Length: 202
Image: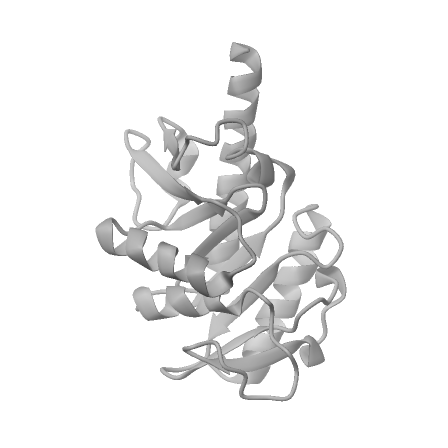
């Protein structure tokens, strides 16, 4: 993909995610695979509802900047996805209420299992509700390289389509930005269902 097209996709994603309340303040980050050596990604610290083309920069597959602007502090978490999953064309990280808190009420949980929901069929590669989709939960840290290493280790055991960082938010990806955003919308709905089920059981 050309950088200008990637910037259009990323800035539009930022506006939409911000409108849904999933990108508070300057939280979140988004990226698009440009080619076999470069990734377009949001610049660090910019409000996502007001992104412009100048708020998108380029890094390599190790997360090293290829332009002057400083990329997202979580660039390593994007880069590792593109290295692990050759089908990934876009990565989206959100900070919704339910995506932030679902892994916090039981710190022994290492995954959030979603099962039986019709909307699971929206997710890439899934054609039935009669399935369990497991999203790993990782402890939060400011050491992004270490966290990227844990994501890679878990992926090599069993691939997954997204994960939660405890007290932080959701990472998910797909072949295009449109499909990644569809996954975000589906997962956020399912997170709200899970949170309501827990409330009703308490």
